[in-house]
Amino acid sequence: MKKTSRQAMREAKRKKATRQKVIVYSGLGLAVIAVVVIIILLSGTSLNSASLMGDEVAITSSDHVPIDTPPGPYSSNPPAGGTHYDSDFSAKFYQDSDLAILPTNPEGYLVHSLEHGYVVFWYNCQVSGIDCSGLKQTIQTVMDDTGNTKLIAFPWEDMDVPLAMTSWGRILKFTQPDAAQMKQFVERNRYHAPEPNAP
Image (cartoon, rainbow, N blue to C red; front, side):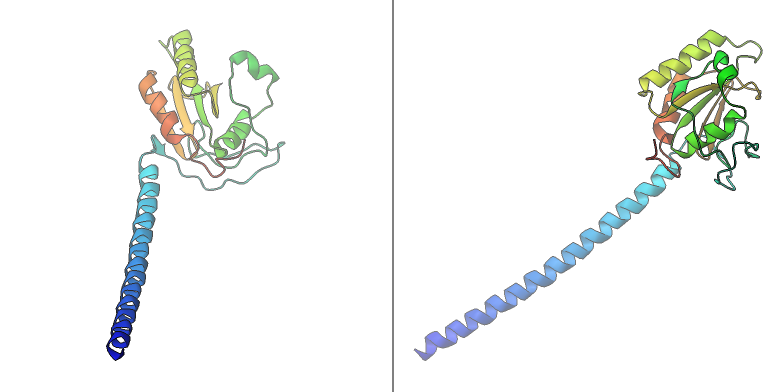
């Protein structure tokens, strides 16, 4: 009878030791998994930043300014961020004919769209030798191919290239439209902004 009692005690000690080992190893395993997840998340964030296209543009402020005052000044032309109005433009392909009915200082509204994660195609048909209809068609095709979400095409004659694309804090200028690069810019840069989930 005593022997059985000793065996039972040994068995209980062995089970207790096994349970403690399982708890310790489980805790260590969870800690390792947590560290790996944190490393993956942190490296994913830096990879996303590194994968943005275009030249980086310094943005000193993202404040709203009253609509009756000029926005800016901006660190790039066309602007890729900075002070702006508290209202934006909708996703659309804007034509020269739209300018007559749009408010003055459209850049103030467009920069607000950039703050919401938009990509803007700024196009200039006044550049010598540019095929305007071909440029517009290429832009429209890229917009269609990338879902027309958070995308604006806007005429902008105040630049020396036929096309510039901006997202918040980034600009890429084109001497000739390149549909593959344009599409890549949209896919990499769209939604990278202070308020990407705003409409």
